[in-house]
Image 1 (cartoon, rainbow, N blue to C red):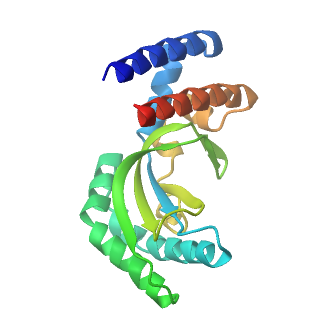
Image 2 (cartoon, rainbow, N blue to C red):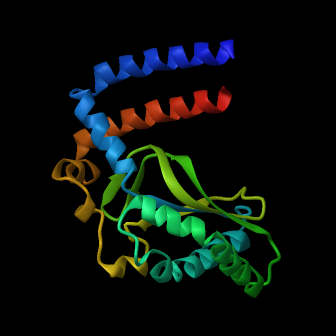
Image 3 (tube, helix red, strand yellow):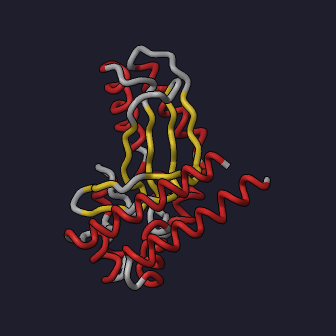
Length: 207
């Protein structure tokens, strides 16, 4: 416990120092970043391994899960609603993934869960999501030791669900849209955020 408290104190000092140097207008920037994180529900699929076969299986499971988007999230108008819909349909999601895995000739188990998890900074279809913790629907195939695949379930930016209408632009403020679509200066800020968040994540895992 004492070690954990020391870690937390050191982390707070380091983060405060980095923010004061690297990120002017810290309060507004941090608030916008946090609101961006809270505006999306992500899909995260972990393959059994990095073998060619397991990576192909991961994509087949992805396609099967994305087919469910219409029925799962068509009535969701917020992240809490999308999260609740995913939570309520975990058995259906797992069953669909298992069916596809069997259809592809494998017998790996699969686990679906809704959880908050750390993501590094990621670029996606013309915008960038900053590093940090996000709500996510996570599917782990087999041992889950392979490369992952991710997208944004809500707002529905994964294809084919992206055809449903609502976009990330429609739920962000102009300032937040400028951040996720931003240029070199914003990317520098996001790099600082990623460093801070990866450090925070490391301390949490270590503690």
